[in-house]
Length: 354
Ligand SMILES: Cc1cc2ncn([C@H]3O[C@H](COP(=O)(O)O)[C@@H](O)[C@H]3O)c2cc1C
Ligand SMILES: O=C(O)c1cccnc1
Image 1 (cartoon, protein in one colour):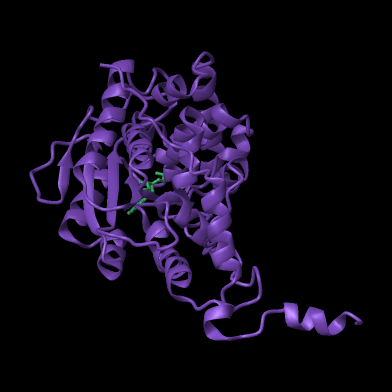
Image 2: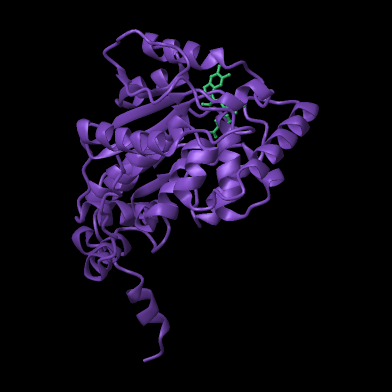
């Protein structure tokens, strides 16, 4: 089975963009004074092809999987934490549960490839590709067949969910390693700079992680195209998120991107279909050092910078009130004309000698 890249429309519509800009600029505020929220309102309007933005049934999807490279001591935590955290999420106790409840997001956890068999649960979507990836220091993380199955599963999951906004998060011990390797391979950013402390490595542990990742990257010199890189260096959750993001964009949903790992999936999706970026809101900048470089590469500016480095989708949901505010400001604010307030033209006229 080969995953067919879904068609994604660019949101460029010159007439609509002009209309939206006019609407935003004529609201009762100095032009540009709502800063980044104005760009966000414009983006949302272009995605929804309307100057009134509405959100329905927001979804939070956490993709979970294990990584063979965890055996090489690249994380501060053991692999078993992945399945334990999935159980915690299904019991409602993880950070992402708290934030999903707070912000009214329906939460689904996807078993993309956890290294344990999981019991059925109403919030668990079972699409296990394998019991963890292979150790990328020795082998490609996954076969081509597994890669395509993961991409397809991601797309299927999005198709099965309602709503027009979808937030992406992940859980998988050692997945900052895959994210760093993908960032290096797909952008040329130095591996040393792409590699960070993840769950909280000490200095000697970080040096060890860098050595291990250098061995891993040298093991896969030919995996240069995005899909080859994803199969060789990625993870089941990252591949599934990539397919899911592409599908979400093809359905013109707003995509809320979390931190470094969700960002790595976004990067792969962008390298496959650049227009996918039009649908993405980069919600926060993670403290994981590669994330800043990843966002710079995408010329993206995140909404929040809170020194967070958790993942799960937490940064995505914390930015949700800002996304809602951008929509409401566009929908509800009065214009100078409707409020009967003088625009700056009257001052300019007064300053111009007759
Ligand atoms: C208890 C716990 C909860 C988490 N929730 C997200 N992560 C985050 O940390 C992991 C990536 O970091 P590394 O590459 O260093 O393993 C991922 O599971 C990510 O989602 C967690 C990690 C831990 C330990
Ligand atoms: O930014 C992230 O997604 C992140 C950073 C560190 C650990 N886990 C996730």
